[in-house]
Structures are given as structure tokens and as C-alpha cells.
Length: 139
Image 1 (tube, rainbow, N blue to C red):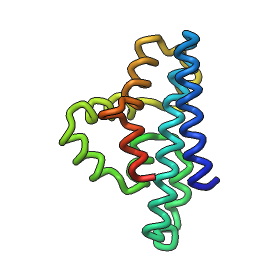
Image 2 (cartoon, one colour; image 1 turned 45 degrees about the vertical axis):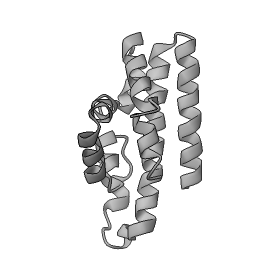
Image 3 (cartoon, rainbow, N blue to C red; image 1 turned 90 degrees about the horizontal axis):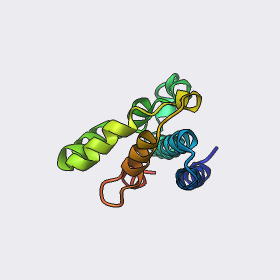
């Protein structure tokens, strides 16, 4: 898997999530919106590896990348400090990150509600302070 593929997957999954919202399919919309963020962050992880060569310094780094945890992916991408600064500057972006971080791959087994799906989708796609537009600055 390379960065371009992960970026394309992220864009496609958010598009899929949008279509599912329009079709009132809340659980699928919630899951795919979060999965779009996971793919975007994994692209950031690969960018971080390219910049730092960390895989040659930390043998366990690549093992840790086999995660779906949003906060762990932010850390693995070297974005924690940048994210925290940005969230401190924009209250709305900070609130959106608080929503986004709660997504997990286990949500595919839950019956998410309309408010949950819409809230996550908005947090990720808000044109001004959305999580995905911010992440795309680093992928």
C-alpha cells in the first residue's frame, strides 16, 4: 500500500459515507467516514517514514502501524504536537478532533444513529475546520 492509494481510498470512503448518509444508512456512513480518516492518517504515517527514516531507528515502529486507533495513528505520523497546536488555535477544529478520535473499527459492528453519523461526517469534512482537510496538509 502506498500513499497515493491510501489518499484515494480516503477520498472514496468519505464519498461512500456521503452517499450512505443521503440514503439514511447511518451505521455504514459512520463507519466509512471514520475509515476515510484512518486511511488519510496512514498516508501521513508513510510521509513521516519518508521524512524521518524511523523504520531504521525503531524496529517495532512498523508493527505499531498495524492499528486502527486514531490517536495512535496521529502519534505514529508525528502529528500530535501539530494537531494539538492547531486544535488550540481553532476551538472548532479541537471539537472536531474530539469527535473523530472516538471512531474505531469496531463501529462496523454497532448500529450508529443518524446524529452520530452526521456529527462525525461534519467533523471530518467541515470546509473551515474539518479534520480531513487538516490531515491532508500532511499526507
